[in-house]
Image 1 (tube, rainbow, N blue to C red):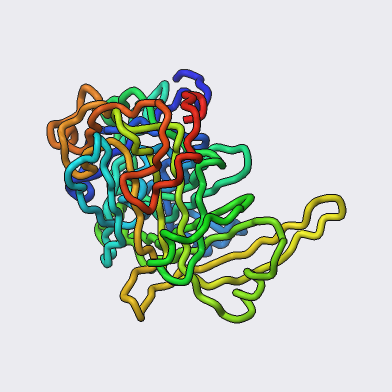
Image 2 (image 1 turned 45 degrees about the horizontal axis):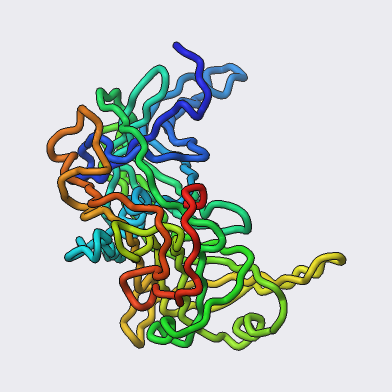
Length: 384
């Protein structure tokens, strides 16, 4: 077997059109860390044999895949993780100058959208079926590319003849692309002013579990359970607003948006973006950082809840804007599947015209993502 560094490993990802059935990869998913691999659960025979030894024999009783993936949020491939996280998706309608608005919503089901991983290294190529996303954390920090950390469970790996396709060009997000808003109700978010923050984390967890049965070593299914949404924010301590929110039990609506105004889609003025809105958020664990020689900051945590009064789900809106036509089915274009992809797999993703790096003064086809012209920045491929 060959020796290799981790950068040579390639991870392919695709949406399973039939739950638990492997498909060829459609995206090469760049990553900064990857620990996903086969795992086992063992039963051990511990009967006394008249000896001091505490074990006689072990049996592999359960085979499955599990691990973590970390990477930078990218404007196209991240859509598959959002689909797997929330479980439901509605294909967009007509394009606005080659841009498509992709809405992801929470499926009230314990069988959310599953993925298929293809892991290709210098020695082997394996695919993992029924990959279920357990948790997804989004982190934005100063002078860093906005990143995510995700945990998964799946069925065990199997040898595969598929090849991971070449990585495609995608827009990314940095600190200047973040917009964080708090308002008294979802309808007030559009007109609310953005809040200056220093770091932000959003964590969505689904408590995925193996559905084991007798008669097989593999789980019959992998099911998501209760869904929780929490986050934390750090900002300059120049008021007690968020401390008072915590003390008074105040609920607010929150919007987190990443809008890459260095990039446009097609020949128009629409920017790659991700927007998440939560209708009912409460605040906790507020505390200041009173470092002796630093400007004092404050950090607060928040938890999103279902808004019963307005019938709005814990994540009311999750929209990704890019030039992919449909995450369910479309003929492939700029996102090309591997040569061995089956016809059913190759009908999963397709961008239209490529995203250009020209200057833009508008951030989105929707009014809620449109800043003033003064927010437009010069195009720079290195900033994408």
